[in-house]
Every structure is written in C-alpha cells, then in structure tokens.
Image (cartoon, rainbow, N blue to C red):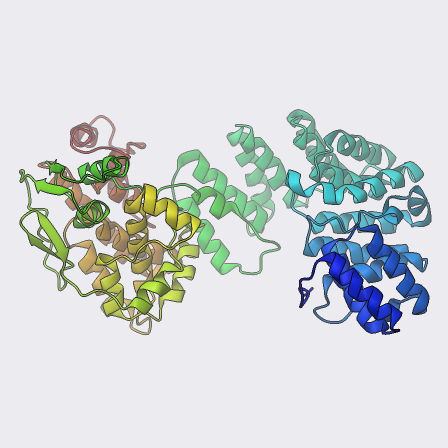
Length: 608
C-alpha cells in the first residue's frame, strides 16, 4: 500500500469531500473521503459522507478501485462499502490488509465488525482464515500500545465461537489471536475447547502456546508433546519444545529434543538454528555460532526468518557490540565528563601505558587538561610490536598527534551514517560495511586517527556526552570493516586490505589494534578460506599481549581475549589462553602454568 500524497487533517478532507459531492464530482469526493478515513478511521462523520457517496454513486465500489500500490484509505473505504453491499467477508479481508499495513490504527473499530449478526452470517472456516490473517499481520505478542486496535477482531472471534462452539479451526484461530493481545485465559479456554471438539496437532500446538503464555509450562509441554504424537515428522514442534525447555533452565532436555529432530532431518532449519544457539548457551563456544552462520549462508532459502544467531550474539563482546574501553585514560575521561569544568587546569598522571586513541579522546574531551605519562618497565608502548609499513601516530613527549592527514569531509559524513556500537552478528556487520566500499584508502586510514564528531542524533548525543571513547572506538571498528571491502578483486593472501589490517594489528598497542583484529575475525566468519590465516594472526597477537603483560599492564589484553574467543578455528591452546584472560573457563589449563599466569595477569590490568 502507498502513503497518501497529501496529509490534510480529517476535517479538511471531509470539507473538501462534501464540496466535491455537492458539485457532483464523485471521483474527487472519493479521494478526500479516503484521505479522511486514513486520518480518522472511526470518525462517524467520515462514514456518513462515505454512505452519501455510495448512495449517489451506485454503491460506490467503482470509486475505490484496487490498483497496484493502492492508498490505505481507498482500501478501507472499499472494505466498508463491501460490507454495506452484503459482502462482509471480502470487506474483512481488506481491513486485515490495512491492519498489516498499520497494525496500531483501529481500522476495524466500526459497528459492522463487532455486530453479533456478522458472526452468524460468516462461514466459520472463512472467519477462522480471517483471524489467522490478523495473526500473520501482527507481532507475537502484540505490544500493549497496539492491542486496542485489534480488539474488534477479538470481539468478532468471541461472537463467532458462541455461534460455532465446536468448530475446532475457528476456536484455535481465536485462541491464537487472544494470546497475542494478552487475553490468555480466553486463549486457553478456546484452544482447549477446540482440542476437545477435534483432537489434532495444530489444536495441541495452539493449546501449548496458550499455556506457555500463561506461564503454565508443564501443561504447555504436555500439549506440545501430544502434538508430536499426532505428527512425529513436524520437526518445528520439536524446536518449540526445546525452546520452551531451554527458557526454563532445562537445557539438557532441550538439547535432547533437538537431537531427536536432527536425527530425523539433519538439515531442518528450525532444528539447526535452535541446536547451535542452545549449544552455545551451554558452553559459550562461538564455534557453534560460526557453524550457524555457515549453515545460514549455505541455506539462503530457509522456510522462514530466524533470529537465533542475533539472539545469541546480542550484548556479547565483539560478537554483538564493541567492548567498552578500560585503562587509566578512560577512567580519567569519565571523571572529566562528570566535572562541569571539564578538567580545566587539572593535571592527570598516567602511570600505565595509554593507547594513543585513548589519549587523543581524553584531550579532545578536555582541552584544558594537562596529561603527564610516566614511563614504566617493559616494551615501549609507543613503538609498534612489529615492523610495519604505516604509522598512525606521532609522539612528542607526553602528547600524541595523528601521523596521517585528516579524511575528506565527504568521507567523514558518509561514515557517520553507519557508525553504531552494536550489530546483530559479525556477518551482518560485514554486510552493512559494504556501503563503505566507496571510500578510498587514504580516507579510511585518516578516519582511524581523525574520528568525525558524533552525529546530532539521540545515539550521537548520548555517546558524545557520556562516552566519547565508545564513539571513537565505534568509528574505528566500522572503518576497519570498510577496509574489508577495499579492492576485493585482489586475492586475499597478497591483498592491500590484508596488509593494511596486519599493519594495524602489529602497530602500537591501541584501540585500532582491536578494530583491525575484529575486521579480520569478521572476515573469517563469512569466508572459510581465510580462517587458518586469521586464526594464526589472532593467536600470535594474543600471545604477544600476554608476553608483554608479564612486565607491564596491557589495557587492550582482555578485549583481545574476547576477540580470540570469537575467532573461527582458533587453536585449543590460544582458546585456553583467551579464556584465562577473560576469566572464562580455563579449558585444559587446569591448575598449571596457565592458571598461574591468569593470577599474575589479573593483578596487572582491570577486567571489564
């Protein structure tokens, strides 16, 4: 459906409709009636003018034709005219279409829909299909704010089950609608009534969902298991049972049901998605999520959309979001932001090595702040960890400045449109970053050290005022994701994009190190051919950070551990080391050297 080309108030549309009707210009009158209905679908005056138009125009249906990309007001007007012409089922079909277009608008809140006699006139099979169309057009569950608009359909359902108290399909559809809009008691009653009238798989599923919405899990599981008995080959029900069990802490039983489904069909998408999500939930191994991403890429024609991968990655370091920065400079930044004077005249002494990006973010947020860095033991943090072909930063005493020119204003403006500290999962981040493929290499490198100001959006204002470090880190992450799409015609092994990212990985300890590693890890998720190369780089960089941390703090070390745990095909030894850094399962390290190393590292840097 299209939007109306005008957006006049309903009263003005009505005035124009009456004027056109008085002049005998029925087509223009119809246009304005449709506009008024779109603005005020329940206003009695609108329906009065529609009735006058219908009486003058021989029923009026020809004045509201259904064409491609039709206006929603036209659809609703035709629905009411169909009902007036004795064709209410067709009218309901159009109202449901309008509900799908704008679910929170009360299109059906009109007397003819809620009249008891409508349920008597409609065939119960047709009513059931209409109610199922409403369910398909609305979220499950419907947010509270959207429920009043659906109340007329529930009245229709209630009237219909009174007239047809043993029609199983109608009772089940009525239950599904009631459950979606929070009428759980009615949902249970109608679904149970339907199962008693005609036991079936779908009836038990409706009953199971109703019980589950009421928190009656034992009864929900019993109903769903009866559904399996009706049709052991419907593996979607197995996945529903597994999800219900997992949501209530019964993970082993949930996985047992999933294994039963996979034994019947190892490629059934619902079971595969649920299995990988639950196995990740059990042991936290991102290999399950990588396998799920591989399955999704290899099976683009799944029966329906799945959110398991995004659900598993949400809120997890690097899988679904940028990790917060840590270290003394970040602590000082938070203190400065809480100070109305923004650190004017204050001197901050940083006794631990500070990533140059952190130092630049701190001084940008508080230009009047004086920073003194105190040299400590261990490798010089101002020097790259390996020889590289690029340097991003230039040091001058305690200050640091970018060693690269600023990017073009056009590049900065383009990047700002896409920066966000979170993403659904790594493949989604990779796909979104293709929009940055048009930026040239000089601009991308410049953006790493000259992050643009946060945009004047709600998110931008929050980040700029409360956590500019997160904004800067997010800019660097998306810039490095953009590098993945630079000169993609070059074979990976000798490509410019690989060499640039490796230069960033092995440069000075910085937030750009994390951003570059995340880009490599992301590429490994979407391209299995690069996994051995990326896993080796991540393992080497992680081992280097741990070695340095023996002599001095490494503020990015914990983040590198999280990146390693997200890396496909990482060696068991590197994974165990990453677990030690992040405080997770120690793997096979046991009480030996790895555990002792963790105790040592824990005293050197803070965990997020």
